[in-house]
Image (cartoon, rainbow, N blue to C red):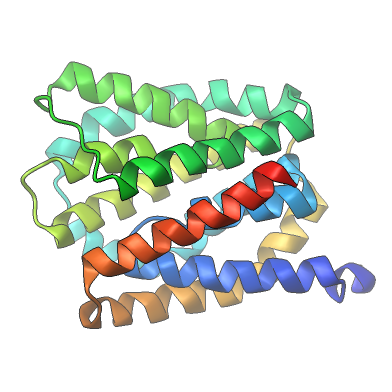
Length: 244
């Protein structure tokens, strides 16, 4: 146990968690997209995915009270209900898939959505309930399998009329809700073990610190420029993981 705590991969995992937490605090999303590809390369998807979901669920708590006051529940409800229903499908895929193809799939998902974000792509259709349900189903399946379920919802919500701070609050609440359900589904599947708990508990302090610091730094940043830089960073990391 002590050897694992002092290992190089643990130190790298903690550093990745700190960066991911800061990005999460500033943007309201992005932690899973930053953490999961490199952690999957170092630890394997079956360890990286539940660790990421655990951090997303519990360590992002400082952002929830403010987000809950601002978020548009009417927009979030149909997406969240559909996502919750389909998270177990993704959890089954994670529990039964081979690690290497799944690691590459995780990296490829981040690359595709990073390119879409960089290109300025947005959903241009009306935000109907049926569209929200379909999107939530896709997002929930992706989250259960890879811990990365937010990107389709990000593109969808960014197309709405809400200001940046409302979209950020919507994303914060959505990610925490579906991450909690994903964690429960993985627990039922037996994916969560002592190694998951060890890595999550060791990474949590710096992840939480990053979230708090990023939340306070949010007011001082050019939101558009920071999102672009963050997306480029995620794209480069995931390309390396895909090719490794």
